[in-house]
Image (tube, rainbow, N blue to C red; front, side, top):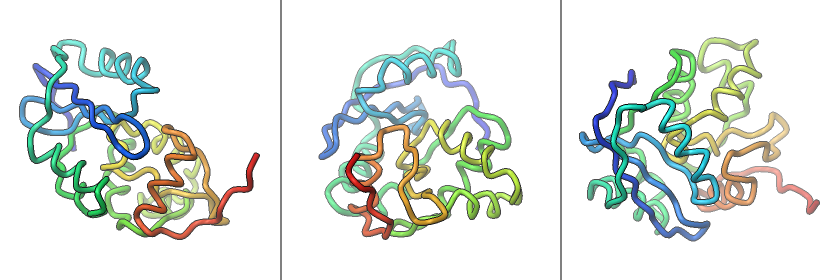
Length: 179
């Protein structure tokens, strides 16, 4: 999904069971970024880098976007599939993020499996880096990518959130031992 440069962006805040979410949409009601308030400075820096001309203002995102997030966190684990998104990234990153959207709610895929799906089976590390750079997390469900042994591995929002999201969706994974 090639990204055109938006003129304005709206930053919405949504209380969820796992923290306050930051939802950034453009004037065409496309999701441009998603993160959590504990990562707000990093997300704002990312927005300034990728959308330098866009005006960012606090407000309420488009009703269908907000309703989809509300629905997801209230139990409709497929609600986010309808959220339109646009992201700024390389062609490879965009391919990885689009491929993430092929992992159904309640299922997981290993990094190696994701690399195979994008047609680059030896590029597991590059796929992992692209997965970690996903600006529209949860909608392009990077949390559904796990280790090849079924264990939880990295998630930008933290492993406790990843665990919650996967449990919420009914996915199977290997529980981590307490550190």
